[in-house]
Length: 358
Ligand code: ASP
Image (tube, rainbow, N blue to C red; front, side, top):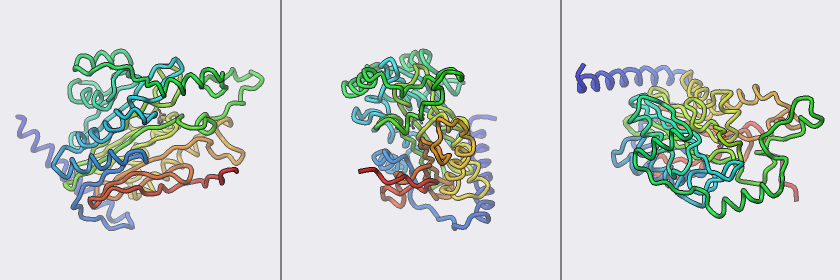
């Protein structure tokens, strides 16, 4: 098959598959599928600038993956966002390690980097892994060497502000680290999930998924991961099927929050599969969260009512343009650009946060 014929074949297969998926979902869904006139872009709550940028680019005819990556690049390069890219909080040793993955719906391709140091935009490196290698995932030193080979500028990602946060954590000799004692140690079960007990900035990530009016969909997730993590720790964000999953016939989903829980439940894949079987994006996100609740058994991660002490959020867009977000705990939001407008939407939730004391 020459290139042109292969492309035509892929395209017509995609259209046939998409049509079939929309037809079967429409009968299972309570909402009628809207006819799209504008892009639909969803992102985590910190992604307002990303959804705007990506929607503008898709509306101007850009590829959906190029658009969502350009969107998250704004946050990756922002030194004031301490959860993503440059300025992100470092690992235990004071070194920033970044994770990211991308999926391009139209071609069913994916790329990923994990524990990448010194490069401000890991999402761009993940895109190059997809485009310029026969691999899906490159980690650590290999990822840095790959980025170097592609001419990425190397910088110290640790800003002074992030260094001061890390130093305080180190000086406090906090028990809130990731090391667990031996099971027979006297206070082995004494540790909580850090997400619940650290004041702020412990978790944080940006996920962004974009759908074009012609039904092409792509996504990206990028993060500095869990702050003060054990060096080399990899979260859900660069794992295809955990922090991000895109299916060109169904839609896309991504996550933020405690990556360990999302990895164990194949989070984003679970959400996309739920949409495939007829759930709306919001229902599918809640379904993914219930799976996490059902599979979290460690007492140290549960409160007195057996609910996870940590938070996870899922965001999703279906191929027919519906969107949704859900969090384990109430009061969360996601960013969305639809009908040419950028706004924040409340996430559905499983558990109501207790009122703040004082
Ligand atoms: N999911 C990310 C991780 O576990 C962190 C986050 O989303 O806040 O690395």
